[in-house]
Image 1 (cartoon, helix red, strand yellow):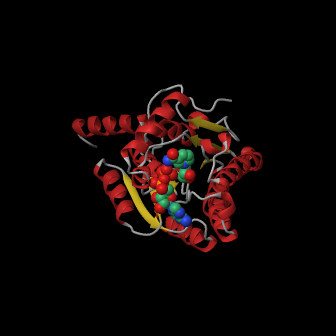
Image 2 (cartoon, helix red, strand yellow; image 1 turned 90 degrees about the vertical axis):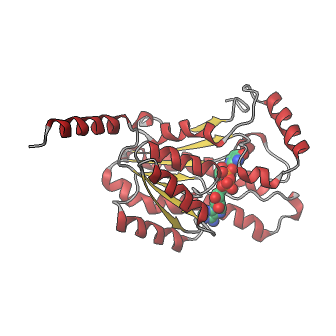
Image 3 (cartoon, helix red, strand yellow; image 1 turned 90 degrees about the horizontal axis):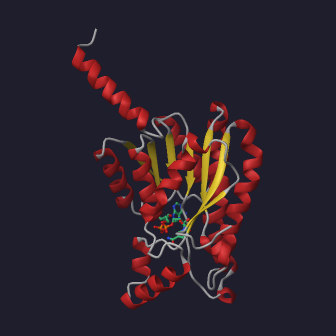
Length: 273
Ligand code: NAD
């Protein structure tokens, strides 16, 4: 029989857990080491999920996300896998299964966005962008499906882009891939609705990430971008990765169980529909 103080500590702990919106769910976030994916991983960790931080290349950033989640009392692991490779995606799911019981929440966030004049893009460059941004959503969803089907529950969240709604110069392969993400989201939601699995997309606006600052370090370019976006958006300021997390938690939690096939614009009121 535990002592009273043990019961009080347990109740306190239980209370904390019941406030966590993703408690004990296994959440895989692709491209989770940087930018938007990193913020989503940290937020999911705070909400009690066991987080799989997928990354490619140097493990340092992914390991940092894992340590930050653990330092805050959460649970996480990092797994290296190129999400455009069927073999590597399958290996990643096998690795997750050795640790936890499959995946409950899948966030398809990994993406590449090379800018180039449309007539200079090669066939291989086109294919690579479609493979990393769009085909990956199919590969990971297919790999996650057996686990979600066996539980009769699952959450798939695909990251698209404001550029699909607006069109954008020097980005035809990227914009086309983000359109494919929306098409895939809609079609897959029809396949999975009866099995308790929701499939939705989130469309970020122009999010100021570390990578943007590396790509455009010139302060006058930053200032020009800020002024432009302040005119375009209903909320006149630059969007930060943290601005994205509420919508991801919503679509990952049971609060969104009757919502599927949808695309949420989280862009400060830039594009409206
Ligand atoms: P980011 O470059 O910081 O994040 C992308 C992540 O994907 C990186 O960690 C990268 O290493 C990873 N990645 C790339 N190729 C991969 C592969 N083959 N396998 C596994 N991981 C891979 O940039 P971000 O802005 O945080 O982008 C996240 C998502 O948001 C992307 O899908 C992007 O298209 C989308 N998005 C971003 C913005 C923005 O303004 N930042 C706007 C709209 C949409």
